[in-house]
Image 1 (cartoon, one colour):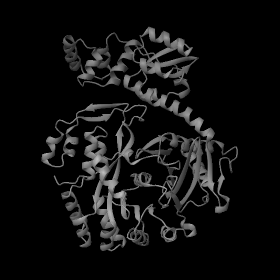
Image 2 (cartoon, one colour; image 1 turned 180 degrees about the horizontal axis):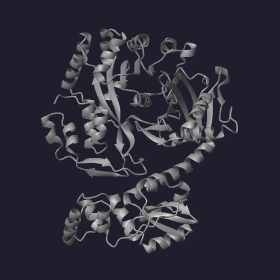
Image 3 (cartoon, helix red, strand yellow; image 1 turned 180 degrees about the vertical axis):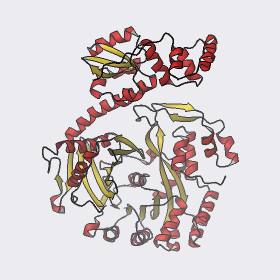
Image 4 (tube, one colour; image 1 turned 90 degrees about the horizontal axis):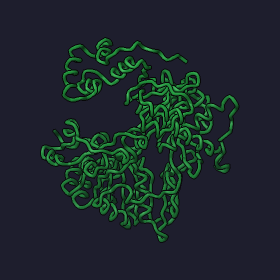
Length: 581
């Protein structure tokens, strides 16, 4: 470990900064003149006037006090074992953090190394002699946020790993699931097994829906999709990549030797009180194989319609359509937009012992009591269409189809809805009007589409502002311009309060925590039915729907801004502009 460097001290901070080239002599004179009136510290005033940056000032102070300066990278490089010498609460309160050990003494990055009282208290807490070093306040705060979070997370993950069990799908359905927790592992494999377990366990803890593992030039990138956005969480060395790939292939029952073709597999996880189904996709790229694992929580479904974020008027429209005795309700949107959650909430709302409710899904995302759930298995011929043909002989009342993917499935679903049954299903489309044209494009005749449809609902998920670090702010010109759909809308936003998240430990410094739905509901009635019968395009359907009061996805998202639930930037990320400039 390097000894601490002692730099020659200067008598005045201004002289040091001029000598270092951080400011000019003219800037120093202007600042000193301003200081006579403001009484502020020279360093703070130089930063405020824009003559220099925080790091330059603190470097100068370190030379003035003849104390080592630690830049932001050096502060962040501290070992977690050293950082936890100082309790987190004390580090936060006094803006300091342990950096390294030198001959049994602890070097501590501080903003005020001359605070004798804090140093004395620190030595009692740490049980070691303290060597103060200087660092910027922003650098210390960032390190405190990141490093103490890692320490807490590592502790939690270790607890989870101890209970983690991994089960692979057996070669034959009769054998059920095979415990792979310790299968096919040797002493040499143990570190990789622990790393894979940690990646999975950490993903569960952080509420990840997907885990991405990809090979980069100098490291392996591990990213979690949290609240719909990918975040890099760790970068293992690139030498670990083959081992990670092999381990995941083993537990997914995939071909380890095949590196040229895509492969799909699955395994299950049991951890504490949770059971999670993991869908694995392996894709060969020019840099090596990339893995994406989708985490599907198989615990019992507990959400109700009222928890999805629907406004009162949307809720009334949706509720009156899902209680109809027959017809079709379609929820559309991209992958990961919460379609299945909405459909299960609908079934939970209307299910009763008087009805035979059956679902056909791939995969079964939620387990729900009182509902017969069928898992599609294309390998053995149990496709959506094959399952639906059998279900028609099961005397069903209500049916949920996980997704309409082809013309045959669509045809059976439509006929089912026209013979006295209610059908809930999903379709990949951008909005409600395009869902109708997409259904026709799949091969369903327009007269059948118009006859069977009750409601089409497009939806998206927007991230909610973290309640722990939420604060009010004034939007910049870009945000205000982007918000204004028309000139008349500008006045609408003039007196509105806007909020965003500052970023904290609770939200992983993103400013967001959890998600809420935004919805576009199109009831298929009267004029809309006639347009469908006449094979109208989606723009004609949209115009008529808007005339009849349909609220667009962008307008629904604006309601969330007005309620202080989400941010302007999030709305711009998730929805598209619907009007010409």
